[in-house]
Length: 221
Ligand SMILES: C[S@@+](CC[C@H](N)C(=O)[O-])C[C@H]1O[C@@H](n2cnc3c(N)ncnc32)[C@H](O)[C@@H]1O
Image 1 (spheres, rainbow, N blue to C red):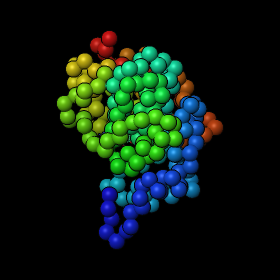
Image 2 (cartoon, protein in one colour):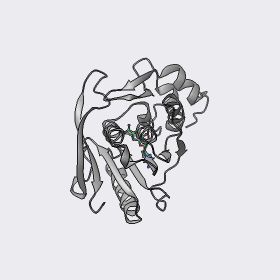
Image 3 (tube, protein in one colour):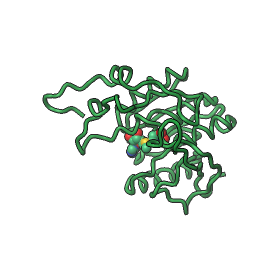
Image 4 (cartoon, rainbow, N blue to C red):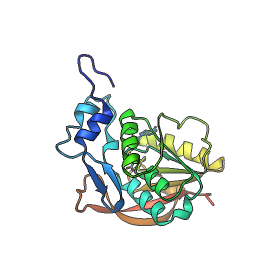
């Protein structure tokens, strides 16, 4: 978001200069530009209430568990068209591409996330189409698998996301959710299909592992 009188840094240059590349805790196959205490992230992301929180600057437990799940079971994605909703850093999209997806799209509402996804895809040697958009009121996209990492942190967003996921499933898309059971995950509507201990944002690079789940919607085959 542009602020009067302030020069916005170029996101690609800012991320390269200030967010070091680190392996994702629990997913050593994937490296990401990750914010640290010295990154001065607010200079890019802003710190007004209206500025989107820079969640893309870290790997989250929901994304990590889904990335681990796809990397360990490539048959789930091989040859399929995959869309990562709320992609953030691109962690799940990168895992899907590394596991052999035919095409991977990463969607996030934050333009800085799109810059980070481009850089992170290149670091990991994969091709991802990254789109800045809010697609959850749109018709279901033309994909085979929709992956959603850690998008149930806000009650209003959680309701909108679930309505979209139900419409996607009804149109024949397989839906997989990764989440460390955050408050607004509608567990009564989901089946748990796997659990892994993964690091969460805020847990530190050396620990802070939490049990996180991979879920499908009831009715998924
Ligand atoms: C907690 S982060 C999770 C990022 C990543 N999936 C992971 O697990 O590491 C949530 C991300 O969802 C994005 N987001 C929020 N609302 C969204 C929407 N309506 N459509 C797409 N992305 C959204 C945020 O900008 C943020 O990057």
